[in-house]
Length: 143
Image (cartoon, rainbow, N blue to C red; front, top):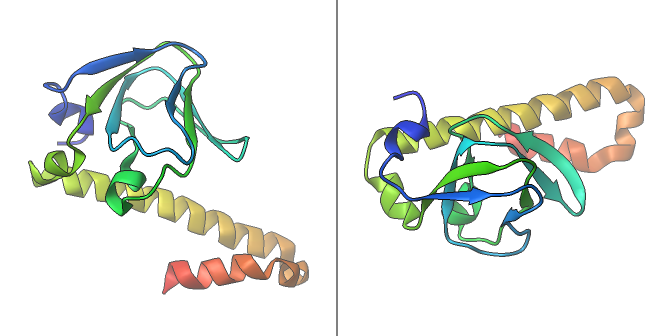
């Protein structure tokens, strides 16, 4: 299994139009969403931090896994279809491949953040001391 879409075919679908909100920063839906088609932007504190259009992409997993409010808002940029998973923990437990796929998604994101922070540290050189928080985050990520 290469993609979460392969295990979501029996789940209901929903469609969003451009500008509609899938997840609201600070809210807690208790749902997972798997992208079938379309494009979304991820917005944190009013700033776009990512665009997502890859089929099989997942939304809401951090909130579900950590039992915390959504860290960012997710807004449709185009007409988009998603599978809706209303029992996410049951879904994750239902097939041994699902935790592996989910772990891979989270590891890719962590790798991207870590690489970005190391690149930032290298670019800033001596000025890096002004961003002590980045160094602290890097220490946490690589421990």
